[in-house]
Figure 1 (tube, rainbow, N blue to C red):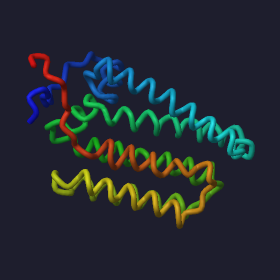
Figure 2: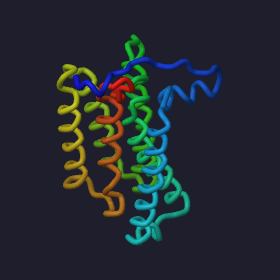
Figure 3: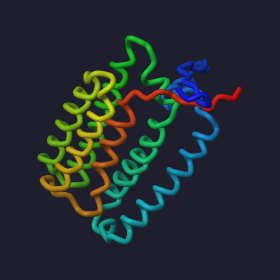
Figure 4: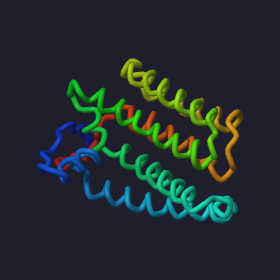
Length: 205
C-alpha cells in the first residue's frame, strides 16, 4: 500500500426520509471533488451526445417521444457511469452487508426498462435486439457477481467488450445509437458490479 494513500470503507450516517434514500442511492459521503467531476463530466458528455445526435440527422427522424426517451436514457447512462465510479458508490454498493449483493443485482435488473424503452419504442419493436441485450445483461451480471473477487474486473471488461462487439456486428441499430451498448454495459457490468477499494489521499503524509 502506498504511504500517501489510504482505503476507507467507512460509510457516513445519512438523514432519514427521502433525502437519506437519495443519498444512499447515489452513495453516501460523496466528496466535493467527486461531485465536481461528476457534474462537469455529465454536462460535457451530454453536450457531446446532443451534438452528435443532432449532426447525425437521426434526431430528425424520431418522434418527440422517441427523442425524449433517447435523451433520458443517454443522461442516465452518462450520469450512471460517473456516479457508480465514485468512492462513495463503491463504499455503499460493495459494503459488508448480506443484502448488498441482492441490491446490486436488483439495480442491474431494473435497467431492463432501458432495453425495453430503446428496443420496443425507439427501435420500433426490435425484439431480437431487446432480448439479446437482456440476456447479455443478466447473464453477464451473474458471471461478474459470482466470479472470484480478484477476477471480477477483468471478467467484467471481457463481458463489456463481448457485448459491445455483439451489438456492433450482429445487432442492427442506427449509427446514432452506437453509443448505447458501450455506455450501458460499462455502467452496469464494470462501474456498478466491480468492487474497487475507495482510495483517499492521506492527510497526515
